[in-house]
View 1 (cartoon, rainbow, N blue to C red):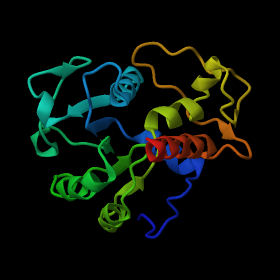
View 2: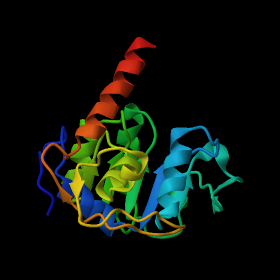
View 3: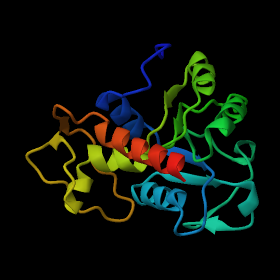
View 4: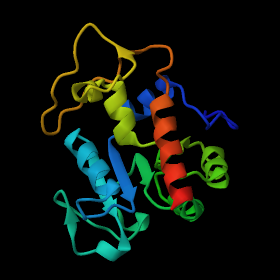
Length: 202
């Protein structure tokens, strides 16, 4: 049972790790086929790590992303979904959660991307027994917990006697590395703050 009123300002690594280890099918709402958009990079990365990705965008129906055909809505998906990754603005999240709660079976996780937070939507999802992550990017969290980002010279704040392998197409990496003090989601917090600052100064 998911604890209500959990702290969504910061997340324990084990919470994020458990989600990314257990989900298989991810519907990304707001996915874009434009190869300079953040949603494109996140979709491509997660697909390359072995997740079954479904792009959801009514304006792109008839096109495909990484060989996956776009669907117009969550209701148009023809198989159970483990996680819904919301790449829309915060105001859109509430209706998307309401739509998610009409699915049978229910998804296990609602994940809102960096810069996306809707506490009302979160409370609704948690009341239905779903896990929720807000203002985080699964691509960043996966790279950090697997220590894959260490290949780019970034301190992942995880410990292991083995260096993260160079991933190949469809390869799922181990996320079970020990986090050290200060690891948590500080990197994601800083990324989210930089995005907020950029938006406020635009």
